[in-house]
Image (cartoon, rainbow, N blue to C red; front, side, top):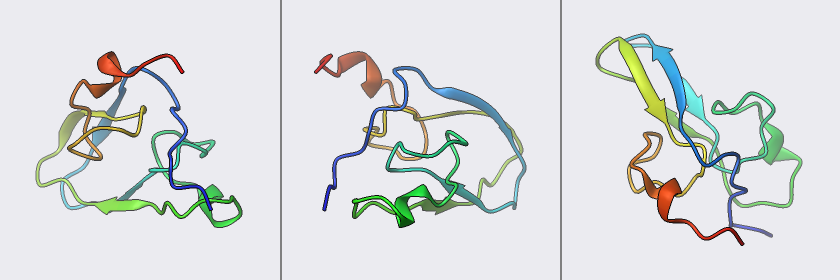
Length: 85
């Protein structure tokens, strides 16, 4: 089993989210609906699962696509420090 996420991109997704709405954030990087989970992890060789979250405020958010943020699902700029490997 693989527990290392695929880096989907080295930049955040800018998305509009609604307060009180539940979202499923992709943590494996394999989804076709980045940054949201489409269930691909269920058929992949990974131990990673979606991260459920509900924003308290409606607005524009930057969601992590490198999958290495220390504040998942939100981008914290970690993508700028990752090696190219």
